[in-house]
Amino acid sequence: MTSPTRSEHRETLTTESVIVPSIRAARSSDASGVLELLRELGYTALDPSEYALAFESVTAHPEMRVLVAEDESGRLLGLLSLSHRPQLRLGGTLVTIDELVVAEHGRARGIGRALLEHAKRVGVELGARRLQLSTNRSRESYARGFYVKCGFTEVNSAVMRLK
Image (cartoon, rainbow, N blue to C red; front, side, top):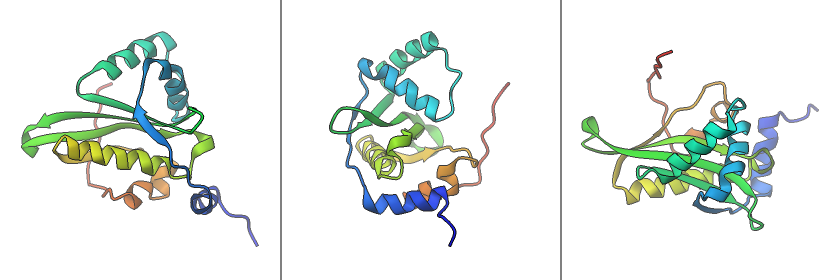
């Protein structure tokens, strides 16, 4: 018998040890914890001083929300940032999930799903016509079909960037 793959193991853990996190708006005191979560997402080269300015700017911006999930002891378990803006072609508000990450020690325990459910509620509160996110197809969450399981549909789209 072969041992389960990492993703199979995570699926098993999900049913055994689900955490119901507290989800709240990020505070300035969360800046270092959020930076660590972003590093877990793969953004390891962030300059701390530039990041600190960006954190303050994003958390103060009226069309941004930065949410954190924490356990009962206040330890950060996850992060979701989203932006919202009116869009002509939708004739209404578009909500975009900009970052979503769950700390390694909290993965496969319902935290990502809880953050996405919270984002859906924010979209409803804002009267959004659409809630969307972009992800890299090489990420484990994509390979496991996490977003599809949470109700998202993949669309034929491409992200284009200037270098």
